[in-house]
Image (cartoon, rainbow, N blue to C red):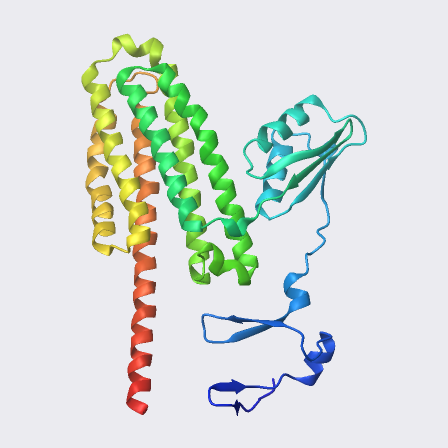
Length: 351
């Protein structure tokens, strides 16, 4: 570590000299441009122009399809590479790539925003992602994901109430959109975690919040999966529908309405920082616990009917976890604000 004395140049400009060794190592000459990036802790980062604009030549991420014998493994490896920010993914095989593997490739490519098949031969598939993640804001993706999840859940519950298999099928198909936004938001989050200089651009300046942000995404994606399962069971319930009373269906639907409100309110608390409202969500979960247990045992033992109640219970639990994150986030932001105020008062008194 070296120290440098600040010098005044003119009336309003203050300069500091740069270490000679650093200048030589980076090949900087008089007249060259450098970029100065303010950090949240008050530090400044100085980056040479060459390094700032240099495009890294990314190596291909290679997946050997011959080692992916288990169903779904190739698909999951492609998703993993995408989430890790890989832009060039090559799938290879010593022989012709099997049809089931090609089906997995095409199916998952449709769910990964920005990823497409650039080249395809009988034993080689090249995937390329040209996505500019700095064009997205994390908050916007969370809101979009929450809206899609609520839509899938709402359609599934409406299909149950109205015995509408067509609507249930629409909910199942819409869950693909949930996966798309979830994968995109997770790629953005991991990218921001690795690239400090772009966090401000995507709205993720608080590094301590990043693990909680990942939990929010995973919670919403899980609710989407459970909602899809509800829709599938609505279709399967059809043959048993005639032995059910509308009263039982209505009770399950009403629990679902409360679950939707919990999800919606919890997500909103993330952005508003309303600790009181988030606490009411948690109290609502507690008061619902005995009511849900009672309903579970009161319902007739008809296939899938009690499963709906279990799904509602899981959704309420996962949704309220977001409210807990909202409280912790609000407390941290309050502590930071209070610390800033105390620092201002301290500096004011010393003047």
